[in-house]
Amino acid sequence: MRSFDERIAEINRRSDAILQRRKQQKKRFLTACVPLALCLVVCSAWVLPSIMPTRSNDPSGMPESVLDSDSQHSHTGMGAAVVKIQVSNGDTTQTHTDAATIQAIMAQFDLLDINSPLYDLPVRGEDDEIEPDKSASANGTTGGHIYHSTTAQYAITVTMEKGASVEYRLVGTMLYNKTAGTSSQLTQEQLQRLLPLLGIA
Amino acid sequence: MDNGASSYRRYLSGDEEAFHEIVKEYFDNLVFFICRYVHDVTIAEDLAIDAFTALVVHKHRYNFSVSLKTYLFMIGRSRALDYIKRHSKIRTVELSEVAEVASDEPSLEEMLLADTRKRAVNAALAQLNAEMRLAIHLVYFEDMSADEAAKVLKKNRKQVYNLLYRAKKQLHTILGEEGESIL
Image 1 (cartoon, each protein chain N blue to C red):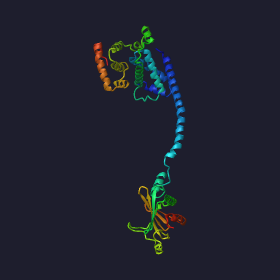
Image 2: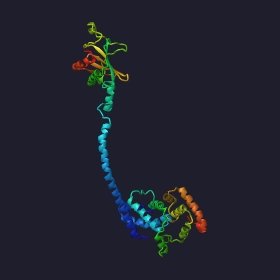
Image 3: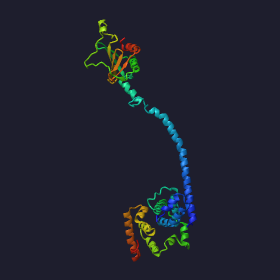
Image 4: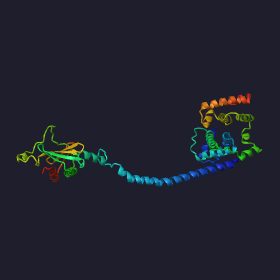
């Protein structure tokens, strides 16, 4: 049997050894884990922004990528998905199926800001047809071409690959997106660019 | 008597002498208790030192919900069971065991069990099974309550009462009339 002093000394020696070992383990853990954690932080900072959707200033709080995709569906930007664009003035209809023309028209639509709320869209019934351009028909030029005038109204129907369609209405210099319920005032320059593409010029 | 809690509080506040008091008070009893498991006083002493070391290293594990003595015995039991698990496959005979038998010095049991009646009970305990022996040891030799013994042995109070009841019955047959007055 150990004496009292020997017991105390042994207890102190063992506890010191354990505390020392614990300190070493802690040190080893930190040495191993801190660089690993740093690597993880750097990697995540690098990789995550490309994975995570970016936030936008939109009051709805929707990520920009989602908004972009929404706007593509409701408005334009579906150049590849759009298969047909029909332009009608109620009397005559022109159909564009050429990919280059479609892409050019959609690119013009993309440039227009039609996110303001729809407020002064002329109210029409379902069966209402757009009045034919009287001046154009008076000139006897109906049929193959639609002639533009400042008061003319055109229905532009953009048909997607899967059959969905977006309906626009061009009234004078106002372009309405009936599907999205938005409208945009076109400048003369924008109008001059858009009309030839639609075949109205 | 707070069974060492106040001494341990003093030790936590930096009084080293308080720890010496705890060791003086409980070391031999703890060795005796552990000896019931390992049947070797040297190993029991070693394990008791381990238990006290745990008290020093993990200072804030003891939350004063049980007496310090109970807590120490719980650690001691745990250490003893670990030791038995580790050494169950190898049975060794320590040289110190042989030396102790040959020695003329009084053994730990002789030192702790000065009372002849307690020595008789201790001798009779060898015929009981391990659980009964431990329950009797804690209640009879260490003056623990059934609740404290239950905590040390990791049993509920009812189980400890049952063990004590059965142990008492067996001791009665072993010790005769003397066993009746025990417990």
